[in-house]
Image 1 (cartoon, rainbow, N blue to C red):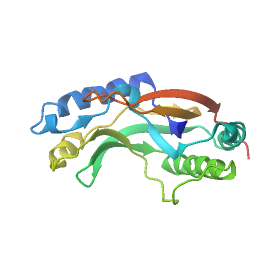
Image 2: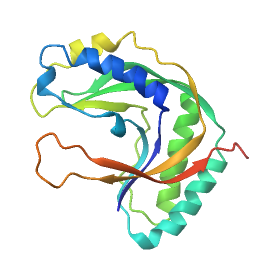
Image 3: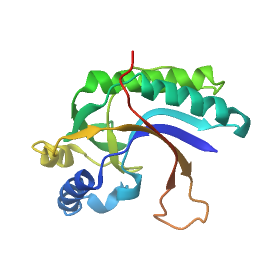
Length: 189
């Protein structure tokens, strides 16, 4: 199964983001973007890709340990940015050092459980809101998001999410996400 470790924003924060995304959808060239939807809004901490079923018990145990060793932390959705001309995202503000630490621990947990991970890169907190295959100037979208400050929340848990890719060939079909494991953050040394 295709898995990733994530922080899932609460419904109230997703509603705040939806209001901003609704405004973005009325900008010129918005129809040339593929917008992600609320069920797909998350902060990926560690993308694992396809994971063999026999690795799951060890992976769950190690992710539980990583969560237990990480204290709950404050976060809010914040501003926006882009990766090239392909990905439009909103960022995070708050205790980003703790979030980065959780991402590193989730990555290490997966590696130690035997999941072949891609090369390790420094974590950058972002929540993807749109993608483009066309040559779209994302600057106006980022400018519109510049003042966006979501309400602060306390991140209570680490989630393991299964990504079910679309397979029906339906235009605009989105992946389906299913939370398959959740571990409370604990902050134990």
